[in-house]
Length: 192
Image (cartoon, rainbow, N blue to C red; front, side):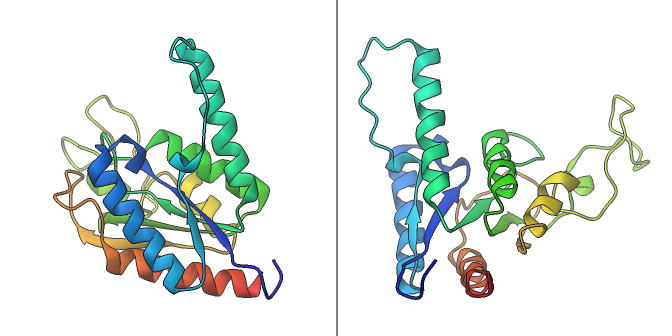
């Protein structure tokens, strides 16, 4: 990135699964914050795919994957929404994107609306560190599986946490948390 380039930031997260009105409001707010800070936010839905209505679902999935991968390849950094989604952990697709970006060495900042460690969100019948099926739960004090947070930290980044508990969130976006994350990414990009 040269001094005159405007950093392109990939906006990874589960927002693509929200209804169009909520998704658009959140992405617009994120892009506005990034513009104010001198960056441009690229949403996974920015891809212009020309697929026929009768395109088989598996073909559509491959086209979306390739388009999003190409979008990630163009970015200078990423902001990764790791808020628990459909359970105690982050969205699987978002986690894949974070892994892909980490493998490329793309600077990332993660954030989650949740204040709790992963082990606090996974149901444990007797607080013994195992779930109700007797499977061990990571006890590292991290926001999710160690590979996610360690991967983000490996790019020079970190994970910001919000103030909510559990994983049934009344609010889907926290502008203050997102801006703090975006400012940290801006600083990271200046040293990269």
